[in-house]
Image (cartoon, rainbow, N blue to C red):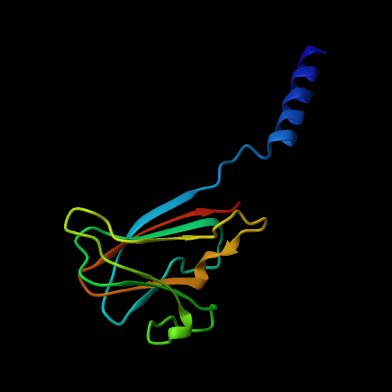
Length: 131
């Protein structure tokens, strides 16, 4: 009887709090190359949030782009540019980009975002995958 009550309590707790599985946070440094845009994710993935920041020591602008999976990301297509991230200093990071500005119910396709910049520069890319 007591075992059944504990099991029922655990099931109820899981139903109230969710699955108990945390959503993975992906963090990486993306090295940039002149003329090449890099997708934030190479496969379709939903995320709750996205953060991109120009790293200390960068010499040029980092472009944040948005294009569907069938379209090649490229900064020369100005309709794809959603943010220009200015460089910082040798010891301070540059500007950053956060999406969305408020929480979304269903998340968004993070693989539609890209970064592009200059060879030798890098960007911090961080996103919260949605389970």
